Structure formats: C-alpha cells, structure tokens
Amino acid sequence: MLSGTKVILRPPEDQDLPALTALRNDVDLQLLLMSQPRPNTLARVGSWVADLLADRDSAFFVIESGKRVCGFLQILRLNLLHGTGELGLCLDDAAQGHGIAAEALTLAEAYARAVFNLRKLTLQALSSNTRAVRFYEKEGFRTVGIWRRHFYQRGEFRDVTLMEKFLSDEPAQ
Image (cartoon, rainbow, N blue to C red; front, side, top):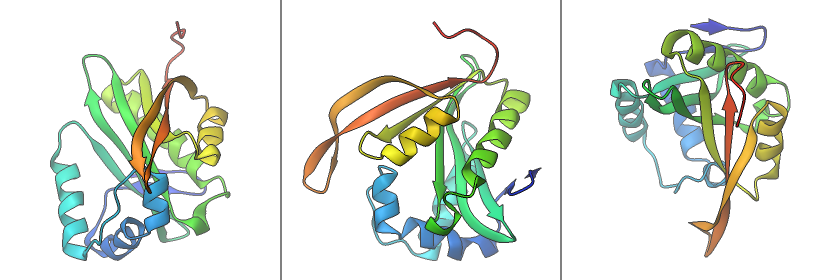
C-alpha cells in the first residue's frame, strides 16, 4: 500500500468490484481513455482485474481517497530490461480536479523506480482529450509524437498523442 495525504494506492479487493464496474461502465469516461466500452458485469470486471494481477508485466492499483474508491492506476508492459512501462490512469468525475491524480501519479512513479527500476513511463492519450494532455504536461510528461487518425471512435478516426516522462535525472535526448 502506498499512502499520500489525499490518496492511497493499494491492491484491489473484492469489495472494490462495484466501484471498478461503475468506472468500466461509464461510457464517456471509457471513450476518453481510448477503451471500447461494452457492458461489464461484476464477474467480467473481476476477471479483468484478476488477469492484470496475474500478469507479471503489469502493476495495478486501486485509487482510494477519503475511504472511497475513485479510480485505478496501472503500469502495463513493464520492460525491466529497458526500464519502461505504459501508464494508465482512470478517475471518476467526482475525484477530478482535486489533486488526486497528481498525488497518485507521484506515488506510482516512486514505486516504479524503487521496485522495478523503471526509468521512463509512456502513455497514449486522445489528442482531443486536452484536459488529460495538459495534466500530463504539468506532471512532467512531454509529447514525443502524434499518431494521426489512429483510433476509431464514434464514427471517425482520431489522433493519439504519445507522451513520455523520464523518472530519473537521465537527460532526455
């Protein structure tokens, strides 16, 4: 468990499944996260969480704030040789704009460095999700490219912004 002043990052528990299911069934939120939303049952979300926890190349945390599950954070495709991982962060509407994501990210970055010796996190965001892109820029991520008309959503192909953040003092090239 990782604790800050506003959030706790911890492993998921069975009682978290209703909150995680609500996040996975929030169509607008899932579209912002470049997911293909589909109806999710508790069992389906439970299987998704179990698969993530069983994957040696991922780390998955529930984000808890004020004794309430308000999101999740995942680092996927951990590559210990290259010291990289792909970030995913999801918060419900009520948790956004209160510094929860920033603190969760800070805790996860410290964990990734200490436990996995990661030197860099990468992520993909819809270019049209300017709130997310601005948040990641504020947190030290930089845009390294854009995949044009890459992600199909709501009848059109959308641009995807590729971002990275070095977690050490290693200079970016």
